[in-house]
Image (cartoon, rainbow, N blue to C red; front, side, top):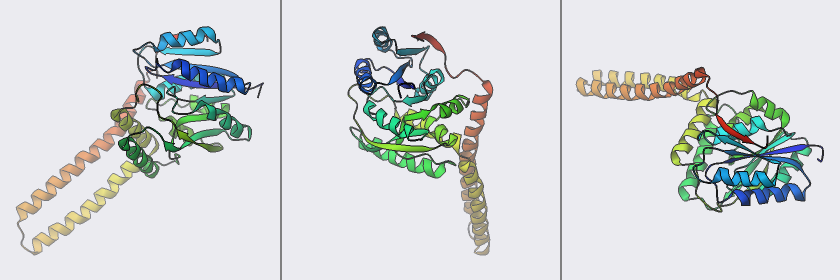
Amino acid sequence: MKDKLISIVIPMYSEENLIHECYRRVKQVVENNKLNYEMIFINDGSKDKTLEKLKEVCNIDKNCKVIDFSRNFGHQIAITAGINNAKGDAVVVIDGDLQDPPELIIKMIEKWEQGYDVVYGKRTERKGESFFKLITAKYFYKFLGYMSDINIPRNTGDFRLMDRAVVEYLKNMPEKNRFIRGMVSWIGFKQTYVEFERDKRLNGYTKYSLKKMIKLAEDGIISFSTKPIKFIIKLGIIIEFISSVLLIYGLINNSDHTLILFSMVAFFIGIQVISLGIIGLYVSRIYEESKDRPLYVVKEKINF
């Protein structure tokens, strides 16, 4: 391992109170195990003193590097920037809020040395999470698993180790609406997991609002599944059958034809609106990709 470089990618968004503790714990892991390392922090448009404190860390440790975004581009884009700039033989992605324990990195490296190309952290427990967050996360992974055309492991986040071969393929995937854990699953290779109990946040608050969680779910489903479109086709066939039966029944029994027709028209309009909305999501993704804008804008790089 002394000849191999481990890149540790840590996205940061308004985490000024956790930076030094995050650095201390990651540093302790790499020093105790004599790892050749680089830490890449991504400042994702923080509005507090996150950048200032990251610079303090870089001044005392030249193995620490910072990518400073011009504005907030989002968690998945911040991870992408770190991966794109990582030079390691293996790349570890871990959030800076310390809910994912840095100490688990060593177990991931052990699995990597055994021949696995991807080692992801699988949560057995989520401490400090609200009932709403727990229940929505549970059903999100179930729904995503059902809707996706690929197997995305349940109860996992972006905390993982990836071999350089996987990283190179990931760097060549240019889509704008990114769902990293789905993209890594799509790439394939030999994958496994290590289990852990996710800790509660030491400080601050979660940056994943309900709106951002919905956007992440949308990215996961739209980017890796055509099932919504297929569902529309099946639904159309079912509706055609039901409406035909109702119409025939109404005619035979001399029912109020106006009421029957009104109900059918209202029902069809609702289905059409939903169908157009789903199709519109796919079309909007095509539009976003066709603009070919860069994924992010870097204001400054430190220690590169």
